[in-house]
Length: 102
Image 1: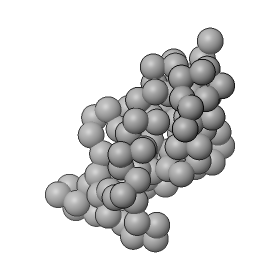
Image 2: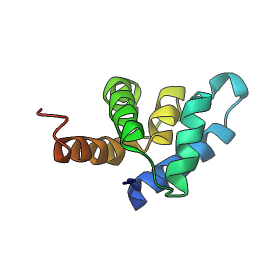
Image 3: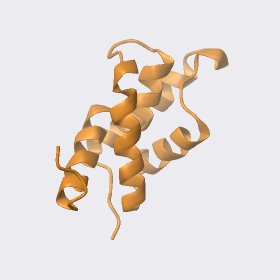
Image 4: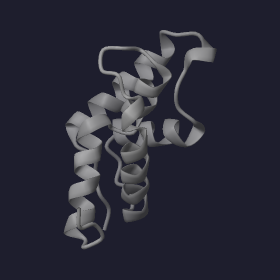
């Protein structure tokens, strides 16, 4: 069974990609994995449970670098992975699957 990003996650992934284009290469956030994730989420392609786990892991750790309204590398990277709605989405799926108790 696959999981599909929400519309809000897709919008954030697209916004993160657009933000990256507005800054110099040295100020761009996101790794190759993050750019791949943004493509998956922006296009609302189905992803595996493993990808949901990775999304939760990344967004949980990277939340401290998210500065809404600022075009920082951390904000870009966070949005590439779906941003705040992505964290909620991943958390809810992991709870539903019995993999998270928090």
